[in-house]
Structures are given as C-alpha cells and as structure tokens.
Length: 132
Length: 132
Length: 132
Length: 132
Image 1 (cartoon, helix red, strand yellow):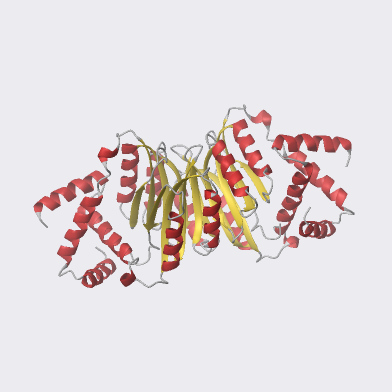
Image 2: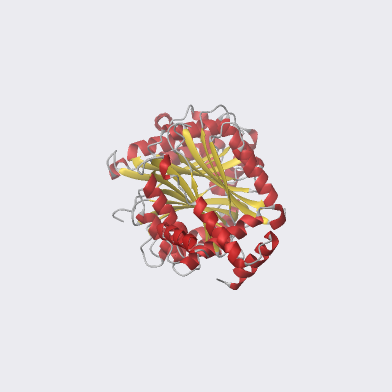
C-alpha cells in the first residue's frame, strides 16, 4: 500500500478511535461483504435481510404521519419496530427497523423514503450478523 | 358500547359470578377510584419523574394516530421517545417514555390514555433510579 | 350506581381528560377483558399475548446488563424489541416488548424482573388489540 | 482476520474482478478516506446535531455489551435512546440516537463503531429538521 495512503488511513483510524489497523481493516471488509448482499449479483432476492431506515419529517404536514403509519402496517411482515424521537414541536425523527426477504425490505424502505413530504431519508443496509 | 365488547363482558361477569352488569360496572368504577391515587403525598409537583405509557390503538381509526402524535409533540419537554410495534395491519402498540416534573408527566400521560379510540392504556410510574 | 360513587367517578374522569362517562366506562371494560386473558381461567396458555416490561437498573452493577441481554436473547422467540433510555451515568430504563404464547411471555417477563440487581420492574399485561 | 471472513472476501473480490487482495484492500481504504468527511465546513463544532448509529454485534463477545452500555452512559448528554432488536440468540442490532453539539456527537458515534468486536457499524448524520 502506498505510504501516503497508509499515513492518511492511520490518521483516520486514530481519529475514529480504533486500537489498530487490523480492527479497522476487518471492519472495512465486513462492510464490503454486507454491501454486496444488497446487489443483485451478491445475494438472492429472498435472502433474510435487515435494514434500518432513518427519516425526518414534519408531523403537521397534511396526512403525512398517517400515510407513513399506514404504509408501515401494510408491510407488517417486514417492519419490526419503529423508534420515534420528538425533535421539536413539529419535527419527528423516526427510525424503522425492517427484516425479511431482501427485495421486500428494499421495496418497503424505498417506498417510505420516497413519501412526499419526508424531509430526510437514509436507508442503512445492515445485516443479520450471520457469517461476519 | 360496541356489541362485541358487551358480549365478551357478559361472559366475563358470568364467569366471575356477578348477578348483573350494573354490579360489575360498579366494581370496576370502585377499582378505578382506588387505583387513581398517583400518591400526591409521595413527592412535590415538580419532582423529576419518569413514566412509561403503553397504549394499543387502531391506526385506521379516524385521525387517531395524528392526534396522538400531535399531543406527544405538544408535550415535547416531557416525552422522550416512543417505540412503535406494528401488531397487525390495523393495531399499533406504542410505548411512550416520559420524563419531567411529576404533574406535567402525569397530565401528559393521562391525556394520551383518555384519547377517544385508544383501546388499551396503562401508565407505569417508574423511577429515575436515584436513591433506590 | 350510588350518587356518591358517580360523583367521584365524574371528578376522576374529568381530571384524566375523558370527554364523557361512556368512553371512560368502555376503557374500564376493555381493561377488565385484557386482565382476564392473563388468568388461568380466562384464556389458554398458548394464546397470542403481548406484554411490556419496564425495568430500571444500574448498568455498573456486576454483570447485570450482560445477564439481562443474555436472558432476552434466550427468549428470542418472545422478546421483540427493547428501548433503552440512559437516565444518568449509572441508571438505565429499559422497556422490553414481548409477544408470544401467554405462558412463555409471562415466564420470560417474570424471570427478567426477578433478576438480582434490578431496582424496579413492572409487567404491563397488554393485548394484541384483537376483539377489543 | 478470521478464516470465514477471508474466504468470503476472496469470493467477493474475484466476483468483482480484482487481481488480488491488496488491490481490493487499497480500494476499501481509499473509499473510507473519501467517506470520512463529516463535512467540517458544514457547520460549527457546537452546532445542534442529530445522528443515528446502527451497530450489529455478538452480545456473547467478551464484555462487549457491557462496554457499549458503559460508553453510551458516559455520553449521557448526547445519547438520547437506543432501540435493541434481538436478531438471534447471539446477535444484537442496536440503533442509537444521538443529539448534541456536532463534535461531541461525532466522537461518541465513532468511538462506539470502533469498539473491538462490533461487526457492523454505520453512522447516519441526520438533521434536526430545522431550515429544511
């Protein structure tokens, strides 16, 4: 590995609080393996998959809270649980944990993020932990 | 009262040996009066208090989800976080954690339970752990 | 219903924020029905049941956090999800949602509350909402 | 690096067309360097910031659960709440919501991800919703 790259990497992992390079490299490899399960070539459509969805929205927005709850209940096989944080009098942070066949999870998560009025949405492609 | 509810109640009071509905209702009311004591003597109105609220409701019920979210954001100083479990396509279990001055917490929790359409509500008066 | 009882009840439901007596009575009836499903005579041991467990403990207590996590994973069929609130530098509030056959849920919940070192524990016997 | 992990990684890099492990690792390191930017230019160090951390770990791993709980309580000003999902008998998914001054939130989140034994960690930099 080029020295310049290694130096930057060492600074990065120190800043992030890793004890050593090996631990940090292991994490990068695991991350690459998790990411891979989500692409068509890297796993099957019905593979048991976990995702976490983070959205921020204004609950005063016309019908938005209702639509989001309704959609989550429509995917009741995949949506395990939601954590709701009341950011201020209008804004909600909602964390939604999904588990199920990969493509069902992906579809449910993408549909929720795309809901009109959601101000912020990120899908974390996580893992059941198996094999890592 | 919905017929289904009344039927189940009649079976319950028969099993318990009540002569009639009125007597059974009187007992429920008496029990509620006994349970009501939030031990006002047990601390000051502004004592730092933790409570956990458990409610079950039908999110398809007209405007109910919206009303509950709205109310929680209105008590944003006391409501810390909610955990939402999707029980089935209609029913929600929501666990709401409140912390703040005792009387503000009590008022927020009781108002949420009393919201029309909430099918089940229980308030657990918890503790900050201090002094135990 | 005796006038004295009714008066007290009216004061109670007004304080709790109910709109009227009917709504408050319905809630009492539903509560009685939910409670009933938990007693041996009122439901079967394998009835689909929901419970919420609230515990407060000191995570610095020797091995306690580990024991509680271990026990929850041992009941992985019944324990759906936990919400953890960091009350202060030592104290944790944990809300654990359980769902499964009634007696498995009861046993898991009672075992967790009885764990040595748990300072506070309450089991809320909740409901799937069905039939209420 | 555990053999199982290495085998999976070798299959992955072969599928992706890399000539050898070194080249693939270099790319992961480069990607990590690109991803690292928490956009310091995007706000001041004490700007009110919300982040969501998703980690997966084996709670049977020596002392790991305890270390993570301890660390979260050490950042009690920033860590609002955690949602714990019991994936199977060994694996935990934990979602941790943080809010506070930007640099305190970043430090807490990165330290948790870097904890030895955490198999998967992703930090979502969210928003308070203000101004969006």
